[in-house]
Length: 294
Length: 160
Ligand SMILES: Cc1cc2nc3c(=O)[nH]c(=O)nc-3n(C[C@H](O)[C@H](O)[C@H](O)COP(=O)(O)OP(=O)(O)OC[C@H]3O[C@@H](n4cnc5c(N)ncnc54)[C@H](O)[C@@H]3O)c2cc1C
Ligand code: FES
Ligand code: FES
Image (cartoon, rainbow over all chains, first blue to last red):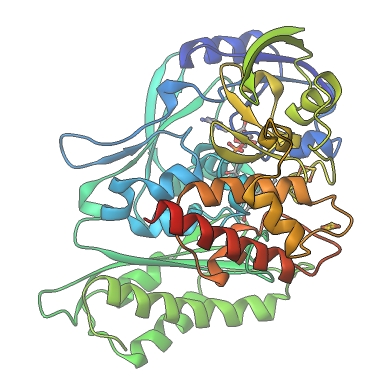
């Protein structure tokens, strides 16, 4: 038995929002793979839950008229990895969430839960950041949209007010068309482990297939929240791909991250990983973008 | 208490469950389906794995009320009328993939999902597909041998 006071099963997003307001201190639960673990650990003893598990309104992966890919936050990691639109247009996301936990976890863990949990190790975060993900957040007074980058407020803290629900994740066409990407999760085990460091790259090449036209770099566990390295990105644009550039990217990125020592790894080791993985992920992304193998 | 309707091992059931209950608790305590084991109860070991609408799920971190209108399959549901084992179970026995047996029902259910695809998998792919299960006895080699064997047998029949 879970140590909870009450569980309310919402029948719609609107119903869930009302319930969150009605029940003081209630917590939203989707796939439950973060919330139920916390309850098992005794962290949320006696809490009230509002379940949005399986709400049809929150599922679906579709392409909107302008080419934007809209992902329902209730979609599981398994469904995202297997979905034809994801495989065709943003494979980096499908690959990233396929690194989380094991198969049974990926069958229940949702991308919305991964985003809203707000931890720096979330495997979807890096890929969503480099894909310029836009979040649609719905509350009692309507909807607002903000880039994922602005959603993080600190470790495990996100910009959600009481009674607000993430209702869509959107990837604009300008942020994926012509891009190639890659995500590397470095962990101590090949499965069922949280990232020691995660690195995501997405880039577009000029027609010469050698010059970088657009470049995005993001890390997980390199700072208190997932981060994008804007300065490094700016420095790389317009440069030809070379092994020297890959080294330069690592060095530049080091200036933007602030990893810490944890039981998993030391700060110094994580800094090594920042250099090494950014180069490797970039090389792979170049390949995926149609460039030469380095 | 909440009323839920679910199909368990082919039998439609309407039952009253405590909304704080995990599906592992419901299946074990209310339906006596003790093949569903409780190891870690935090989604790490896979001992509580069953198929929900054909997908392997850890029932220790799944609320019973979510199972409303869903179809559940446990090892008990694999039983044949004549008492014979399924080819998957037989492969586990013959390849000595079972020692204490605690992890076995969960692994069998994952195997059912994998074999159901009718695809072939390399040993490395199978390793990844069973990564949500912990076995403290066998060292996994015999489990992988059994998996390789049944995946191959199924592929010969289904042939995708
Ligand atoms: C064994 C195990 C291994 C794991 N391994 C990994 C891993 O390798 N990588 C990884 O990234 N994660 C991992 N996780 C963590 C977890 O599975 C993921 O973070 C998952 O994506 C959470 O999704 P959920 O739907 O299960 O979340 P829930 O537990 O339902 O919710 C998580 C948080 O998000 C909030 N929330 C959920 N949906 C919404 C919404 N639509 N709007 C607003 N708020 C919302 C909830 O209130 C809660 O605070 C693991 C968990 C377990 C148990
Ligand atoms: S008991 Fe459910 S995963 Fe261990
Ligand atoms: S046979 Fe004992 S845990 Fe696997």
